[in-house]
Length: 134
View 1 (tube, rainbow, N blue to C red):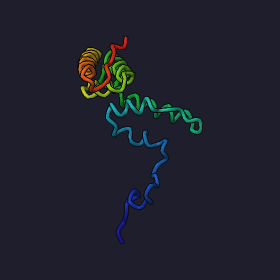
View 2: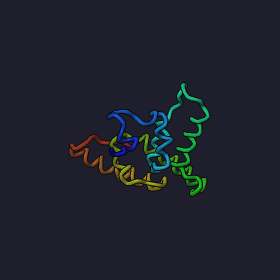
View 3: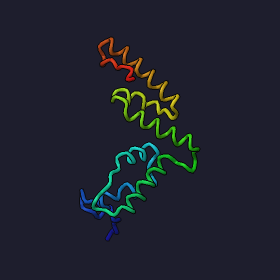
View 4: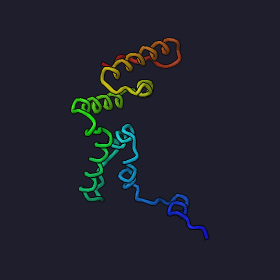
């Protein structure tokens, strides 16, 4: 008989781990960008003890922000640029995100360039014009 791994012997659709544990199990393999998304998606589960949840959230934050490799200013820049990107209108978010800006300066430049392109395309009828926001 062929010996099967745990994953192979599972019935289709059967999960090997509780869904709440997936992030902590996969966290070492997440890129910083994915870890940032998981950090912001994270939510407290009243059915689980708070201590492991705080540990999970802290691991996600460390995986995203990589404080052992960054200065406090670089950590701050990551938080600010990520939040800025997440609050842009969807069409700008997509265009700016493709540039993967890592600093506030490159975030502003990418946003301004995307606004210019979207406004130009909007005046041709290709997409709605995007305002300056503030």
